[in-house]
Length: 157
View 1 (tube, rainbow, N blue to C red):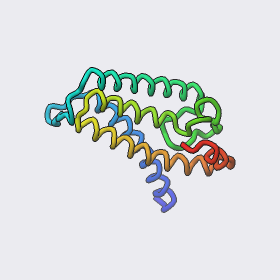
View 2: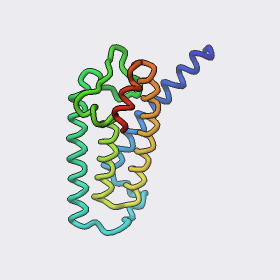
View 3: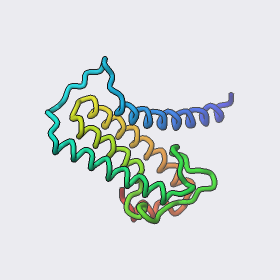
View 4: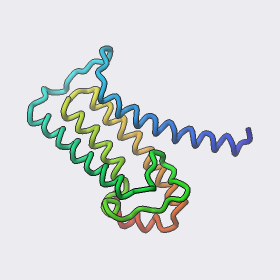
């Protein structure tokens, strides 16, 4: 294996690991592990539970709108698809990464419904993984689309 092939392999492996970790962390919200303490930070109230559910619903709506706006450009990987184009309309005219932010909001909503250290840890972990994906994706988008920097000046988040 040449140095170039190894470098490419490591880049692809890194992308796959980020995507896997993202889905893995999200899935952990749905499982209760007996060996992991589920200690609550404070007692969940009906109001906090309702707020968490509302956050999850709003995040799911944002995600569905983002999926619709992306259309055939949709991919779980940070590398843009080969024949894809830059989506800057719809929700993407307000937020650069609405799907990523909606995933963090969904995780945060789960945390609010449980108010446990475990769910707080999952939310923080997911936010870090998504931050790494955004950094990588922005590098790819800058390389692929010459006008991406104009879009990032216009849409800050």
